[in-house]
Image (cartoon, rainbow, N blue to C red; front, side):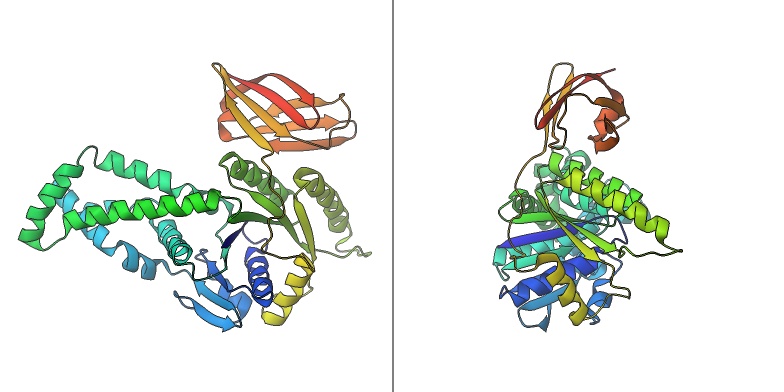
Length: 385
């Protein structure tokens, strides 16, 4: 089974790219599900079909569903929320506050995760394509198991036995299944961890970044790439969307020239990833026919479920004084270059070329003690200030 997750800055065309990929997978004979975890509900618009919070067949080998947080929370979290409210009320917390506290951090993302775990466990589909929310929400989704387990440990430190024992009393007196709710909570966390391990397995899951040739989009894409690599997720492709044709234009002339620069930056920054370019369609993109055209543009005769690239270009090693960061940067040919650090960003100046690389956020609070380069690895020593 393959899981393909698309991420990127809001508005770059993730939904279009994900839908085109899912359609291409289905046409290649794979039983395919595309699921949107973006609350914006743009998947229905892209397909020009009204979707539901359960899988709906829309064409041969293709099922689609649009995540509905209320439907999913009711389906997966109802009993647990009742347990949480009961425990908080028993501890003297007022009703309204107990209601608020009973909503676990990341519950919306968690419900989406549980859908994916269900389909993964049941092996219902050959391919699951995920149209995710913008980059920040995607990173939240992928780190959810650790966040929620940490929250549970802090909320109920060492109280498992007490909750189980007290829960039986509460259930007899009030009918609220506190003890069963706690078991359900633990089971949900186990499911979250199971699917996270699937996401971390590059043979199962590929993450693909969608970008536009624009400054802010390129910067966020590079930052997302660094973080995903740091957390152990395999990014195997970049889809550059909405590229304007190289024509003379009084209105768009300057934009087209800058676009060329950003396309070169993308090629250098993400090489040797599978980089595909999608020209601007000149109109709104929706409907199966146009999505098929885009899917053919992206993948051609290749298999969209293939693992296009498998590598870790970022390594972080603990030291007594800080960290050693190793970055794979193959485009530096000469030894004569300058390296500067500003916050979490590294700026590499090589003759008339400049490249920026984003480090993990902890680098903000560290200084660069030294660096060395032995092709293709740039090694940087960061120490605590």
